[in-house]
Length: 209
Image (cartoon, rainbow, N blue to C red; front, side, top):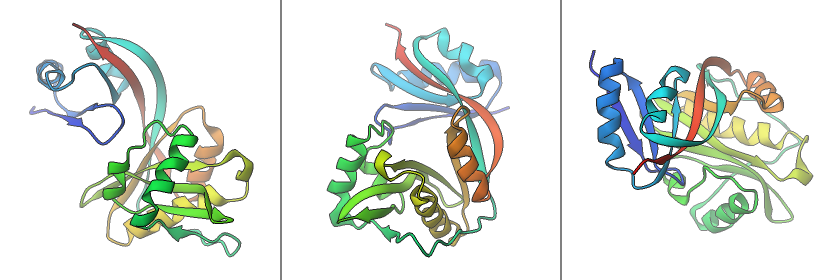
């Protein structure tokens, strides 16, 4: 079986992903992929692939996430939440919002991948959602963040719904990752029509010398 291994540079750290392949193929592909990585990197991989990374890197952090998907996606409308699309001129305040709220996966280049929607209060972004990556067939949602003072008001649901509906209208399957221990977020996504598809391991690693 042929294998595919990608190195993605849209996150704050390089990211190594496997899509398929035998054990031997993955070993060869990983060796090649790590030649493109200088120091620290991340991977969202099948739990069974963790051992591959442990042989060639030091694992600094690991937790587990659910991959969830909604196909088709049904938008939830809320009359009480005003959601607006983030314009290019608002990229700087959006980036500042994510930095202030420690959104570690955010980099401004992700704004180029697809739409971002937000809720504002007194002219300031208090909740936002967008994407990590978009292909012609699949959109990967991410950077779903709400200021702690504005939680439990449906803002994250409204932002996520707006982003997903925008992308789904173009025929894409909508996917996302969420930590397995984040019960409130999982509940929100299930209410939006997402269901659990796979469990994956999220690794932060340092390449061995």
